[in-house]
Length: 425
Ligand SMILES: NC(=O)c1ccc[n+]([C@@H]2O[C@H](COP(=O)([O-])OP(=O)(O)OC[C@H]3O[C@@H](n4cnc5c(N)ncnc54)[C@H](OP(=O)(O)O)[C@@H]3O)[C@@H](O)[C@H]2O)c1
Image 1 (cartoon, rainbow, N blue to C red):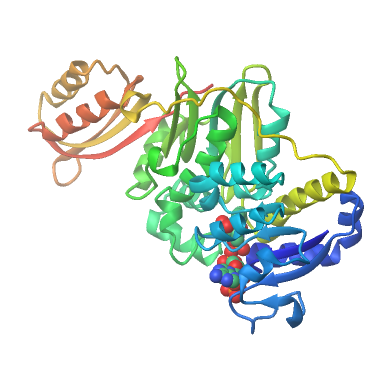
Image 2 (image 1 turned 90 degrees about the vertical axis):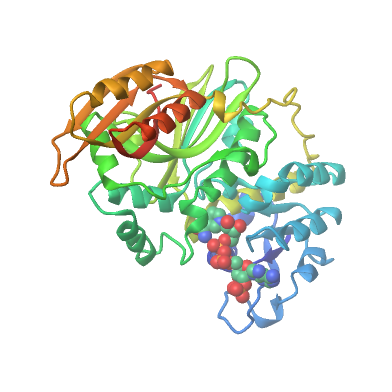
């Protein structure tokens, strides 16, 4: 099995090293010799675990090469990666990729192309780095109707929120994440929830058969969060996480959303700290199961990439046909966010005058939002008091309308935060 590698960066280097150093183990597992044939990079002058003759700056040459039997795409980004994956599939070459962006936006089309060419497109590394997720959702949980999936799938945000729970501001925590190599120099895709939405899209297709693109999901990142919110949440037994959430609605529909959310401190995801990732799935037969581990890093991600490579090689060595795409029945529609029901946390800065509380509760009652708990702080130097409300579940449309009205009350100085609260399950 001659392998062509597109990209020899963080993950590509780890894959190349393992293919060289663990060749015997991998070849035995695959039932065929695995050979790293050639690779594409941008900069030929950087040191790589391949000889100069094996390298090119033209990835098309690798994707289409006659002496390459399988292509591993580890360049990242949408283009040219998508076009190269398609070119390899067109030529009848199986492809293994870790590219969540391409899969989130173009996964179904590429899978169709792979099926029409009778080859596999595999992507275990695209979500959750080294954590086995795609194969368990595709195969091991196949007998289940997945009811709910909640996931911490962005290590940068989880690292930042873990530090904010200790009192650091978002800016300080993000700076520490960058120093420690957990955040990119440009962390926007992480802290704005873009990365998590890409990954959720891939998971939602597998677990719920809902065809969607990231643009259709409700997405909110961690910008604007204050360590005070995490501290108030802790007082009432909650931990704040950036969650990717998907849940079967009462009808055919599925909710899918990425946003910060308070979780009960005894929920298994609440204990996932630092750069760790975890996905908690509830199946109707298996009940709750959780997959957790290193969601990023060269070696951890290479482990998932190589699992796919071994899988493809073994199938080819045995002469097994590529299984046809799974028929999972009709597509599940996405439920509009305005109809999604959640509990909610509000933090308000209000004037310290009589009757404030009556006004606030009246607004909630108007929108049929029940109040579960309240924290009120003595006024500070400037005469404003801070009020924190935890509500019972209400539709997003009602919560948003209540927020708008609360902000207009004569006694309200500002609605400082509105954060959804996930109930335990
Ligand atoms: N890093 C992680 O922990 C992790 C975890 C899970 C999934 N992933 C996914 O894995 C993929 C690779 O990530 P990475 O962190 O390894 O990225 P990276 O370190 O930026 O490496 C990208 C590699 O692709 C090469 N490349 C980029 N554009 C190219 C082009 N037009 N022509 C030729 N070569 C090109 C680069 O060449 P140069 O080296 O010459 O610049 C580099 O070797 C991405 O899809 C990412 O989302 C990464």
